[in-house]
Image (cartoon, rainbow, N blue to C red; front, side, top):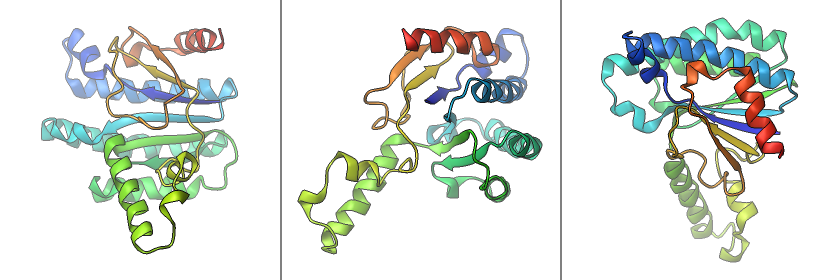
Length: 220
């Protein structure tokens, strides 16, 4: 089973408690640890986390810098957990737009966990589904222009294999927290037949029991 998460509500969680937004993001990162472990315990094979959209670069620089520092801290802390629990890390998105230290740390953890055979954890960073599809269309168009494929070779399966997610199954369930009923430019092609679950809880408050409730509703 493949579960996707749109991690929404960290900033509002902090604002509701009169705390800096950075504290909300830190609590959200801590919650990622708990939810990923819950996914492993429940036998989920793939998890994709929408951690940072390409539109998030429009936020104040002080906030995006803090988020990038948090990403490096999270990866540094969790690499031992990934190894212990046999979790393999992947990423999708425009990685080249991340700061160099983030790219370096991400590549390191991906390499260090590449031989793990358990849960596949995909983190979407600087990700845009529209841009993903545009880039894939350009690749396909170039192949047609180079006459390595014919127009009639293009079908759903072929196009899916040109996407960043070619190596992963489409999500069975997509969960969004914070009470927002939006997809926010996330896996638009891949979720054509995905069950959608919207939780009113902010991401830092979304716990294992909430996840189990989402799975029960999906199964029904």
